[in-house]
Image 1: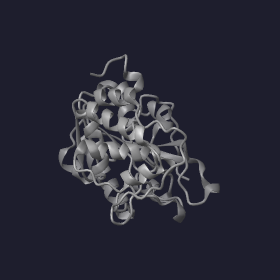
Image 2: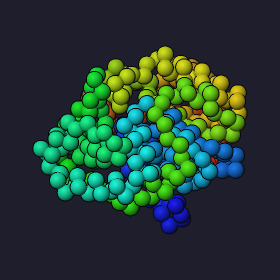
Image 3: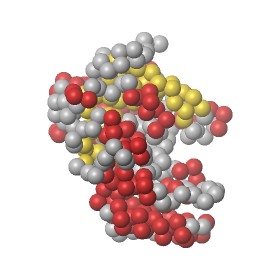
Image 4: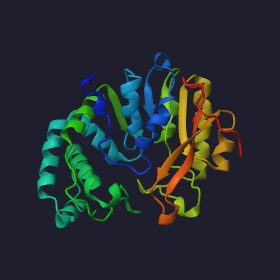
Length: 292
């Protein structure tokens, strides 16, 4: 059960490219008022950093979390439903960890939800730069990371995450499914693969598919549809002309983030992103960015 005592440990149990942990303090003033929120929905789950943050602050009674990465959803399901078994499997991975063992586990194809979850978390904690990346056949292909005594098992964090995930619906699926199920007062946070700032900035290999301009346009159309339905909407994306065009009718705020995925190391560093809201945030002093 989630209590005030373990709420301070509401942090992601995996590292995910594009994760929002570093932005949570900036996001906090952009959330809607607690009393206005019904359910919480997040269709691009990733590490779940925003979900865990919202769960602690706004305490929505129900949540629906989805992602196209079915293995990631399995990990969340295992944390929610089989945390004791998962902890034991991770303890075994931690005890056997070495480079040869890493590649042995990477080549495995576990058949149960909890063993798949243990594999994903172990590879995430011990692979290069904490990446989750697959090839065109959908096979995990991140090389061994040179970590010194990686912390494969964080029992306190896993148990706190398990408590936070109670009464949370977890499903693999596409964001377009929200068109049928979202309703008034749902607070929905969208964190899609970003519109690239440059040709070398594209990174969408979390699954074997891709997320292109047509998907961005479909998402913007869904955003408008859900706005008319009375949902509370928050969306993150890169600060590009296309994104400004697609969401020109809504409140656009700017936040500063550090991004570490780029083929050119000199281009890694602070960048501005936009957060698009269809409501007035509780902190009215939040910076609204005029069109460039």
